[in-house]
Length: 355
Image (tube, rainbow, N blue to C red):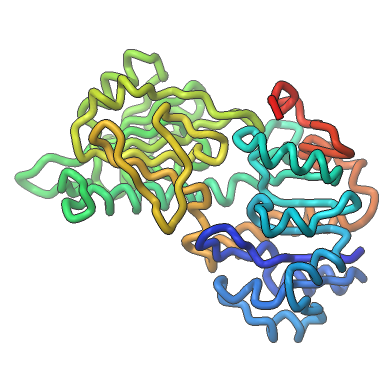
């Protein structure tokens, strides 16, 4: 099969879907692998590293999409990509269509088959291709949250971990999956007091085991509102597979927070779990609502492309191999990952979308 890896075009996105070593594996299996010129540069991989392993270079996006049967990229296609996509393309990437009705309509009009990383689902409900980037985003959330708490950035001027003679900072995390769990772990290791809201008992136990400075609670609405009032940093990491994220934090709750506090919404790709969330980019990452700094960048892991590209490639390569083999529909995890096909919405979580 001819596999194409385009250069990512989202604002300040530096990741590449497949690193050279992974492409070499595909070439050895008899596939023809094409990559758009300079697609790996921001992740630290030159065109020469790819060509030395048998990968072919496409001069531009048009040439890349023309060659490809299977398109493997990181982020959802945007305007520059959409004009090159065809009905016969098999697209494999993050799509997050629940929050993107316009993109969904365009993909339906093209008629291609779109398999989303975030909805490839194992029999036990695990999401193996979402997990690595969730881990990265969870850790970045604490780093950027701590940064925007700095007074020159507009924050309240508080050090999360505190020190002798001062109060510790307080971090509230909504959700204890891969993203929220990693946020909680990093915040706790910094010395902050951490409150994690989670519905699953096993995950609550995991959070409590992080240390004596971590409390795990069920997300009753009153309890969330209470804990937000004196929170310095709030991290939203709520996920419903394939669906739009529910708003678990209302504007009224945010009004009750202290000025200069920070909200980081990891769930923004799926629409966001704060009522006040609106998508931002790394070029203009924040805005202020009700006196609270909001960070809602839709491609958070793109800020660390060397780490992220290596992590995502290690996760997706076995699935790319299956897709390229031609008999991938025998794999139920991949079939569950289909979002759109032949002009129809396929994934159950998207069936009620107005497009």
